[in-house]
Image (cartoon, rainbow, N blue to C red; front, side, top):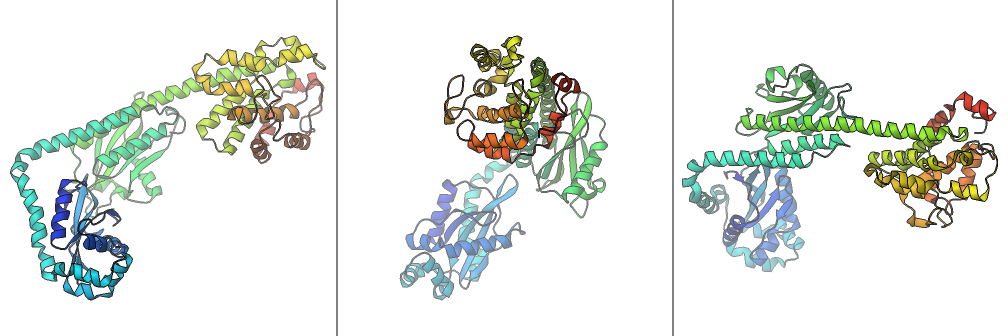
Length: 551
């Protein structure tokens, strides 16, 4: 039976093997573990065309399904007189695929299956029979022995046999060191995922699973407020879980609850519950706590080690130790980033609220525009990071009004042309206020251009169509929606139906038509709650009827 070989790239060894197989009438394939072709036969024209037939390719895929549960599959008969000899290829201790040799006997040339393969390859049957007849010398006994083919394979192995004893220990150490350095380098370069730390945690699991011979790698976090947003009580897994997701989550939570310091532990099979997948309870789970601020906030776990050595090694422990250290650092930075973001946004909210408070008619306007901008951005298909950015854009869109004289901003009645011109300066004032803050770079277009119109009659720069940035188009329509929904010095609030009708009538001229369509489908219940938060004192100052009557 053919021995498994380390995965051979498409290089000199495969080229030599292919040439030797062709000389004895064997077509050589390389396929992945599911039987999908990586390399098709090459060499003698008729042999390679026949061997690369879709008919033969389908037969190999079917055979590969039978080989999946057999670490050393034996040669087998594809059809009468046609044999397949699979040689497993191993990569990183896992089955990578097979070198597959197809050999013919004399009887094969007369079968319907041979004719079908010829037809699928557009070969003339009689010409193919004549060309392949000198090679149709295989029989069950010669295939079982595979003397010549395996002899050549073993001959190549003998050329390095004298070096194996000396090099084995060094090679193993070098491989382990390379994998460790490669993993740590990859993770180190990825430690900038502060906005979405879950992406880094997922990558840690995937990289460890690709490097180490474990069936699964997982990270389990505790609940509570010691973690960045979106991380508490989360479970990340790469690989095949030994039980269903619910049981896996419960078992990893149980293990996490037993950890009280930063030391790694190896849990034997008899204490693993449903995490143990071996009948003899020989499984082990390596657990390394993830610590933040002196407290265990999670655990990096590896279970179901495979291969000749199923016991956790020092290399396994070192890599999990290093990876958990990276996780701890990232979690610290992500938590601080969250704090910084909350402080930053809180400062913006306080600033915009103070601007809105200068004029009772605009109380809460920025908060409502921010909410609607986020909802509209989400409906448009922005990811959550971009949704948060457009929310902040809505929050600060009117920040330039801080530079407008209060006598103009809060004037009762109609504005003069000079006063209206002064009001129209607020987008550029806002731009100048924010332009030197690096964190605001992507929001500046919304601040500067939210009063531009698609038809080019807006301000300050009379942009039109697609010249108007996306965030500005989003803020423009929701800003107008809230303005028309609010009582101003020169008019009462419009009804909801009138507001939507006015916006619809101006789609394509003032507003982006796609944004208008999306706005019509938004759930406005949360917006109405924000409107209802308007303080009673403001209603009294404006002598307005109770909110909701205009909706």
